Length: 575
Image: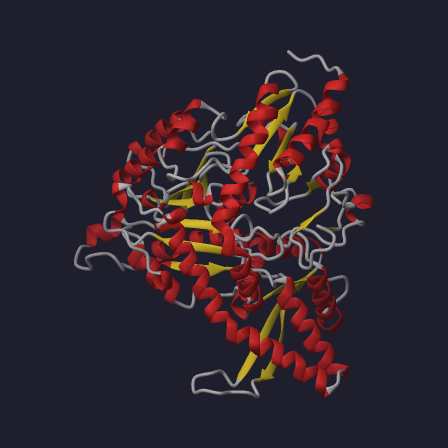
């Protein structure tokens, strides 16, 4: 059941699967090193990195119709995004760039308009950026980092419409129109329910009212304070764009007393942010590609001191600090209370990615912005991408943030069919969180933790990563919350790590928070070209990251025990 061939959808019977099979250690290394014989086997991949089949087909359409020479293509769900991609390419390669934007628009009619205000038609617009060589690599980079990709469901619908327009029957066209109009009608309700669910998750997780005094006067409005995007990485890039929007307003005198010349002179456009703790790789890449970044890679009390020193001279300024709670893949938890005090003292904002912690932690009172990948545990089913940005109404950033989300700078590009699936999948989010917590706790306590220092070199989990992490996590843990479904296990050598991974009979591939257990050699997948550098921050190349699912706990214990037996049989000598 769990034996998925490399590059095939994972699970194999899942439509629109966002993960793909990486069944062996060697296939992971081949993928990380972009070995042609390995990459050529990929039918699909993680959507931001590798277009899924329906997106591949849409790309082929644009290349065939508009392509020049050996160009490749990446499609966006809005013209504005396509133009921004072109701007980025030109900022990298210069004005002589040959990349170009091509747009296709398909209009379908609503033949069953029943009430005023209901749209009479639905217009689907795809803006594809085409380029070749190094310029195409830059296009792919922007597509990956911006995170607002054409989803596989949107691509499938557009492909069907284009096919039907060229050589389809009237009946087929009408069926497509009816399906899409129905989905569009359901979009508003689905998104409204998702936003309300997010507010409930934060305001009263597991049905409990907040006891944290920092919640006094903090009330979320699902329409004004929660914004949906197409992926978790889009949530991060949206937060980064919001900070730039704020600085541009400041530099133009938006928040200044226009009679104070000196005050204007002292207000400079800042594009530096801080990253606190070792994060998911693309978060750091976004900060360095679209501005400047100061990296505090340990995210511990020592780095709190270093951050304070950095800011203490008053010659240094940062817009915000980006934090994961806890971090991926080392499961470190920073001291949010100290960081909040520093933010208030030195005038920067705190952006928290709580994808891993989810319902287990209460972090909004310490954040100005919270970004979440809804693709992961919120969704669970691993068949739809989505993300959210939640604003703290008590933040000094809030007025500008409200303006940003009402401006043309922000577009709600979560496709209607994706929103409907996401709403349906997230209905049992609380129950799945508790079940995954319990499975993970049992697996660690009964099997893996007793092997730490013996077969396993180190277990990374909020309860055991470090005493400091445990204390910081406990200080923000919700009353019924646990410690999550994600842990990492480091082995003493590559041979042991490979033996464990290859013999582990669970699904193996990227992503986390899935309803099924999912493992991957994370450090190699994300940092294979910089192993020595990231090892300084504890990212051991022999780490295997595990996202525990909802399977029977006894089955999980048996499967992991068998894999440990294989490592034990190697008889490796450990320090």
